[in-house]
Image (tube, rainbow, N blue to C red; front, side):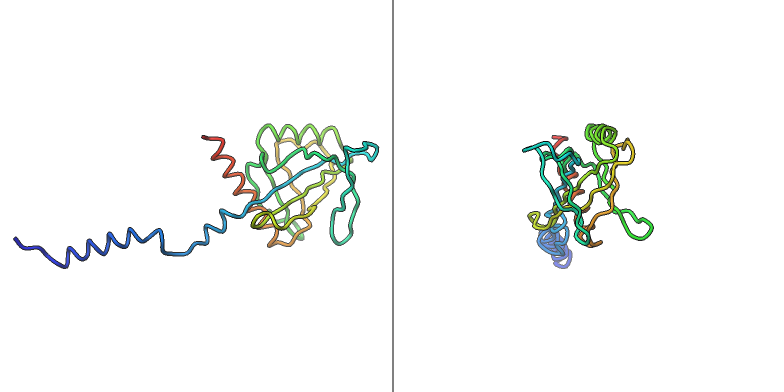
Length: 178
């Protein structure tokens, strides 16, 4: 009986390559999975609600003081997807919320015209970076569960923030399906 040594070595080399494949290569995807973001969306309130409100400073270049309620109306737990969109003269963040949170956004925007939504964001490894990102004026009822705002952040920070929101949304969707 003849055994071809070359064929055997080829099979052994292929099996060894398949066995070592998970330990070799670039691990950039691991960084993306670790990147998470948090978002807290508050509604502007009157300053006469003692104990239930706080004053925050929004915008770095020309700070504006806004009184908000302590509890956010929306968080990253209800984000379905986020993306950076191009706008004339810059970029904005578009966030899509789940159906229930879409109704919350619609109700609060319909009940508070002329007030501001005040948005706090955190991003990066272990949520090290964060600040008040925006305070868009509520000018109309926001139906459809989509919020678009221009952040007080660089493009790089915005990209990392949106990536982190999408990672959290994927994680939440997997947890919901279990």
